[in-house]
Image (cartoon, rainbow, N blue to C red):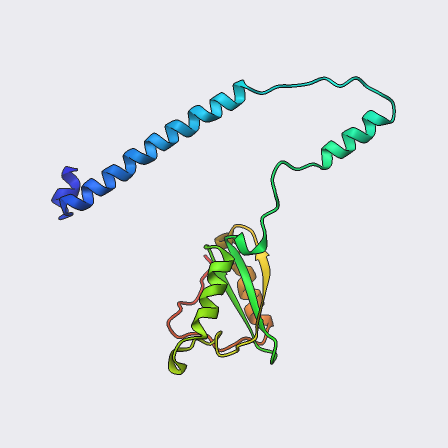
Length: 165
């Protein structure tokens, strides 16, 4: 705390950060103990081998996944493409947030005063596609390839260009 005080941080900010850290540590302790408890309570069953039936059951169980597939609107870290259904223009963007949240922002921009519209919202008929999903910043090159190959809307002037190093 002395370092923060010496660097001019107010005591209220320091206390708030300390509280956040304590809550995080407490939450991690609870999560870790819950994980240990679930490992202890695992149950296994043995099924006798029955010709044909056991083989089919194994194939079915191999296809079962323990997780539900995430709908596109709830995906994060995606490169997305918005096509205008009225013309050939398209917009390629990237977001670390939920895709639906970002699309809602584009749609909300349509309601702004005419002079404040973004280049995306000037094309009212928007259709969104997820172009690429993976670890976003490792694959920015994909975004550049799409940008080079497609007829794009004019870019905003306040957005910094993407660089790959």
